[in-house]
Length: 124
Image: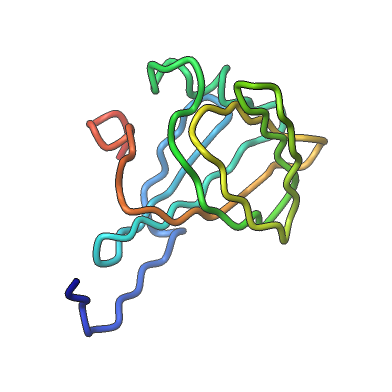
């Protein structure tokens, strides 16, 4: 695999925000790696705010992310639940729902190489 040998930089705050109810995201692409800042505002839940955009019963994307603020509850289709808080690194397989825990918005930064159902013109 060939890698770009030049340094690359993007500032997430400069990226346009895609808003889905109480969930927002900003994505930067660096040599094919997508870095996305996702914020679940207080009261946000994937199945309420993003399910209609995704067109699936559960979130079917895998996620590798670092939680930088707040807490997020994640429940798998089989009922397994885990909470992730600021400083936690999470790896989520497909087939889950997630929502903000408490009275602080949850923000995490995830890293991926595509496979994003938002890429089909639904979000900037």
